[in-house]
Image (spheres, each protein chain N blue to C red):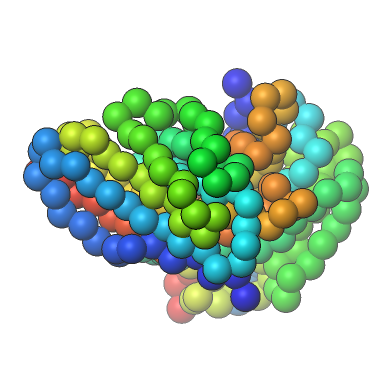
Length: 113
Length: 113
């Protein structure tokens, strides 16, 4: 079974804090993705990575950065958290050669106060 | 950009009833994916379709890849309370990176016992 884990299920941070969200997959997947999910807006891609140290901006990268130093781990960084970044954050990964079938982690519900 | 329109936005049904939902686009898709998201969890991949006209089943779920390649359908037979959740369709973006998916906004299913 594919296993994608996220470091926290729930997180509360203050405005201006630097926030790290971690995602780990144990299936040697090449591609990893970070999304945020908001009511009425659906899933929106923030960043994705197709290899170690490689990254590409998604549709809403502003206010976020990412890090992929090891194949199994993909981190999302909020440099200075703001209240409009309160959201559900979802990580996903795909098998090599099956780039479209994304497997999601359980999500991190982040609240910025 | 590409958009996927899901219909209906929400459904309220009685346990035991069959359910049909669809996903349409003005653009051609070469792959259709159907996901289910339980409350507070990440989406889970249900079915992947790769060929126009393809009909694929996963237990009580059946999905079809429309012949025009601009739509897809998901049916659930004999619904049960654990079918509650949001059902998303998704497909790969045309042009640009092959890794990116477009997601519909989802169909919220409620099953009354």
